[in-house]
Image 1 (cartoon, rainbow, N blue to C red):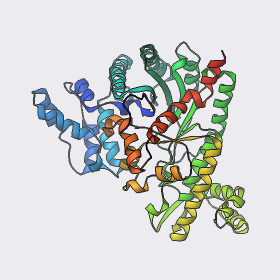
Image 2 (cartoon, rainbow, N blue to C red; image 1 turned 60 degrees about the horizontal axis):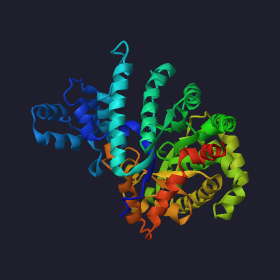
Image 3 (cartoon, rainbow, N blue to C red; image 1 turned 180 degrees about the vertical axis):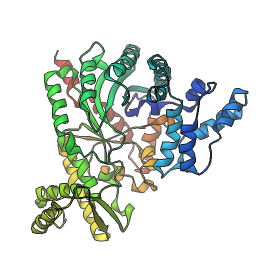
Image 4 (cartoon, rainbow, N blue to C red; image 1 turned 45 degrees about the horizontal axis):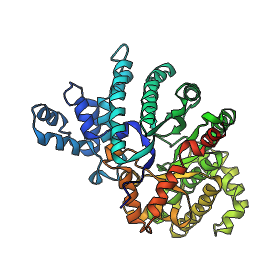
Length: 458
């Protein structure tokens, strides 16, 4: 058990993922909404039509059992686990009812007042929920994306920051990281810089990259990461942490490339790495199998192996430079998106394990912190056995990590639940959970970016 007197720091939260079933039902349960977007996705994923409309009708009629049934429909639980399509289908219930969908659909001339009212309602409920949990510090991430212009996102962000400022005055520190487009983060970064340097910039502490990572290798963010670090040097009192989801979903590439992505994200200067399952999951989970990646991805892996040949060999990984040079020449004659098939046997899986150890050492040297979210990882990360969760190897190899809840509303969890899961499954010694809580406080965005130390010098 965690000590309930210790204030918690929650570092990996997606704002709309914090919405609890009962709050969503209160907000939308009596409204007339076209649920076809949600219903069609649910039917594709689950093979049956959801009973949402019937449940809502019964709720409106005062049936107390309807609230419990709605909760079961809303929460992505253990029985739903192992299938991302199912998770997205459940999350679509949130999306379908959101005022943000009106902006996407263009059904209102000016959807912002409705969206602002919705965000204010859920932020107030989120802050109250966090206080009840004993959270003293929380970082939320929020993505606007198309069709929101910077001006629209600015108008919606400022009231959130004002709420956060009030919460901070009331004794609980709330922070915001805007999630940027992996395809082109530069326009979004203009808004982040404006907000960070503005009157409520104290509450803007990071930039985040989330959602689909496939197709967007970390190397493509080298220039952007450098720009963030340059911004931090010029404005240390408003420095921003780089929060980067990586190694969470990697079915489009080899296991070696998935490990490389995590390693490279840390070396490029990401302060915290979201999930990083590829870094620590035991390759034995995948068994003997085949998978493919693009020629372009394989070429990047060859360059990585050549650059790290000596270190890889020191860990027992076979690296034949001449063979790699020949393969590279051959691949360069092919189209970048042509597939390259990889087959894994026990020996190759063992080499992947050694590659992970090299990458874990690189993450440690870079000073990056891994964010693990156990419930999320088990239910949508393809990890069915708790013994295979990366936390075990992170502990064994000294990889610094913090424990978070990701989407506590849809997963029906809390950060305290997640900490207790780690304590139980990893058989932690007494006092180790308190150490994890303390590490989370030391791993806040404003600490890792240098902002807090800069403030102390003023």
